[in-house]
Length: 192
Ligand SMILES: Cc1cc2nc3c(=O)[nH]c(=O)nc-3n(C[C@H](O)[C@H](O)[C@H](O)COP(=O)(O)O)c2cc1C
Image (cartoon, rainbow, N blue to C red; front, side, top):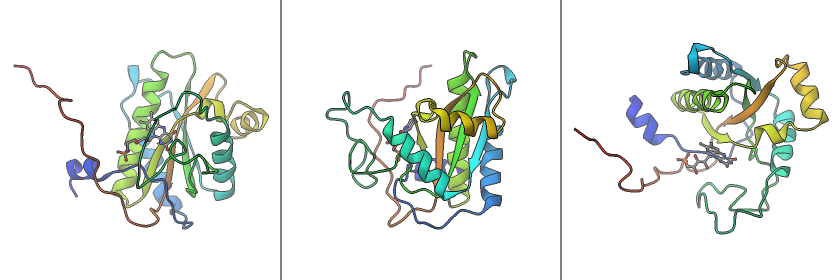
């Protein structure tokens, strides 16, 4: 697959095998995250790869607990890869993925959030190249907004003032890999 094919092939996966991804592949994916474009060339993001499925599961449950459903009426994400919006019986916001990359970024920096999501995009593309499925997940700050979350951040040496910005789930797709989603029309324009 060339890069353009890979970009179209990548999908957000929410059904995972139990099989763990190799640590060397996780390291390559994290490294790809660190090579993302970053505002002012500050390289301010820090990425923690959690390769322990039990800890991933615990974080996934903390993540789903922070989901607010009151403003989601009518929301629909995917038929073939249902999200917690589509199926309220799903117990983990991490969908059984065996690994997760967590992007932390400097809280008081104007481009903290875009920086983090550039890292996430690099990581999902790198994962696809390695045959690993992925999904970007939100509610990172809320997930860590408790004593256990603060304790983990201290253990991992996350610098003072850094904020969890997003997650990237990593694992192998269980069942059929979903097809490309059609694009809504009229979303690009070239002006000469
Ligand atoms: C900023 C952002 C936040 C997202 N948050 C979640 C999330 O919390 N849970 C989830 O299941 N998917 C999440 N996604 C994945 C989107 O649902 C997914 O990209 C979208 O449905 C398009 O599907 P595709 O990635 O398969 O093309 C997020 C994606 C982005 C870019």
